[in-house]
Image (cartoon, rainbow, N blue to C red; front, side, top):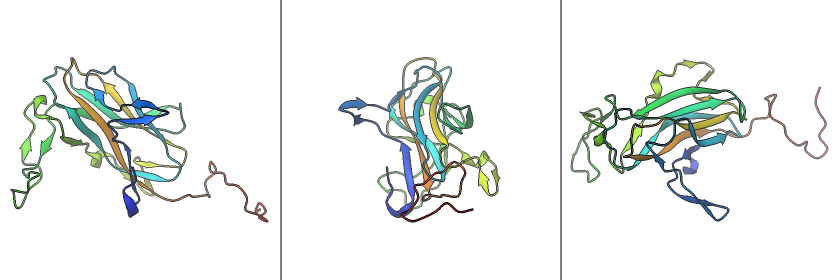
Length: 196
């Protein structure tokens, strides 16, 4: 999904769509088999993940083992995968603000209500991962993807039982084509020769 002139794109985040006249559903049940590939996006340009999380599409129930969705990276399709961030859906590490969608709270604040139980996650809730724990190493970070690298969203841990569903997403900042890399080819322009 293109977010206009911002340069941001949403990878995933589609509840239902169609491909070749067949329905495609990225809605993930919490009890889905562990290590299930959800989204595999091959980056055609430099991009950087600025947010990663899920939208809850079915109320969660209490689970002995919480579902985990992961943001991963691979250098090539089918290559070795590296987990960049694992997001536990439930547990005790989530918090929310005190505002509401009706704007009844004049000055809403962040980090006002701690999650008490998995059942606090309801349809329509959005859960974001803390990406601040990923250390930046200039000039790039682990959230930076070179052209040709693969951004992966995966359901890595299944919940103990049924109850709850989500749609994963990553918001990425895209750049334009960049031809100086040794894995990026382009067609010669008319009359152009290869440089020494």
